[in-house]
Image (cartoon, rainbow, N blue to C red; front, top):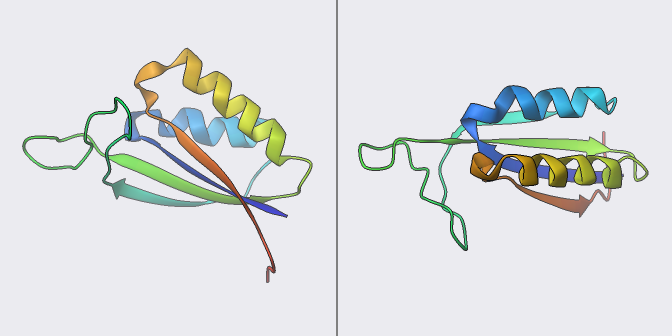
Length: 97
């Protein structure tokens, strides 16, 4: 199994959740009001008066075969929406309950 951590501009929450559902991934955990700043060109998303935008983050655990499909769909979404500020990471899952 693989865990996929996805961080993105809060305005795109519906698109990210819909993407997971379209690929058959029902389960996820979401954090709202996540602050951060991109490593290369991203603006800060800190939820304060100077930088009011916030991010959301999703963690989903998927079968090994589904992880590449989700990552490819996320890559396409990121290219199609440059303001999305999407970052996604695939991590191994050692054990699950």
